[in-house]
Length: 569
Image 1 (cartoon, one colour):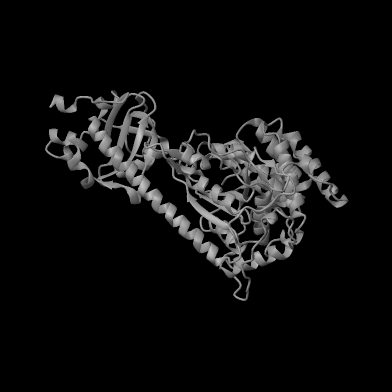
Image 2: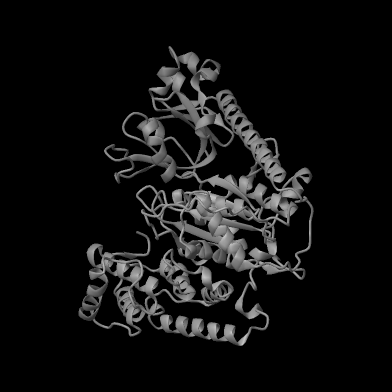
């Protein structure tokens, strides 16, 4: 039997079949680590970088993906799967990961494999956990996997095209052609009131300030993170807003195995053809329909690490350049050399009529956010939950086509603002003085407010000033846009347990709640009694910055109880 398990040379490496228990596969994907306990250990230590691995789920009897070894095998006793010892490991990167509906049953390939001829049946190969494959078997399995992935992608592309055509039929008068942006008369306040009524009519309850903050944030920066408990309507908000305003929303579910941008932007297959990803297709569609606003909804944004699979997109956000005719554009998203037939994809940039919205949950199955992601996004948490509220059945709002100009910012940067009025100058002065004050405590703690954050907070407040009446709670209580901007742009960056951060939080909490920074813990405890007595409200009563003060209080209590402060709950 020694001849049967001899190593087969494939390209510059080897090909292997790896049998994985189905219940452990998600952990292997999320950590980009394959592992064995005892069986398969000898074969594992023969793996080398560049080797190919075909992942097979032993209990489900399906082939699920193709991976490449990226490092030497190593030993690590840190738990990989709860309750299971997997000390012998190797790092891998996904080449093709099939979605569940595309998994290939063993009946489709078991009798075609050369390796099976040395055993009684395919099960005997699987029982060894990790088994080398001859070159002919590698070709067979890779063909099956890539063909199945391509078939599914073609089906999804066809489905997206069908949805696009249906959306066009539902919105008569919209033509697919390039247009110049033009100043269109638009009553923003009336449009927001109609939008709010439409959402209630559809059975979703959002506070007016949440709807106004979402639209204003999306206008200010084309990347918004929606957080909040499950069931608060995070995924529905961007879809319904697009529906109500004549836009187009595309849902893109994030998978935990995404480690680079190929899943979103695309890749070149073995035949040299470029396979565009859903985000690149969305961008190209938006370039072809400049008169409509598109939103890509990245569902469960932090199941994988956004700074990895969104790297090019995050860079392009800061690469935006204004256009003479209005709006803005960026350099092309792709960084690949493509065949002449695919050169059209190489020219796709991020147009001004596209924004990305990511929904997040914060639990043990998700990743934290890097500073790179947080600094480039507005974070809006859907915190206002009124279980007694019932959507109005009297609303009769109809979808209204918003011009694309309604989604464009007044400027990309504060220095590019045209002449502002005296009232706006006073607003800007208040913003800049407030941020300068915050920096007194944040800079020593290692969380300085830089020019990008300054500009985005200022532009958000200026945009919000166009519709101040919409920044209110359901009971009519006003919400200060500057308070909201600090809550959305400054607080999500603060996390850690250092003494410097503790001093900063203490000072900020006192300042936000009373206007005077707190210098001693004893003072802060006395101050917190007021908020705790009021039953931990999301707005600190009578505070200069009610929302900021309340969230800082939550962060302080967590720092006291758990030794770690974070915006995310």
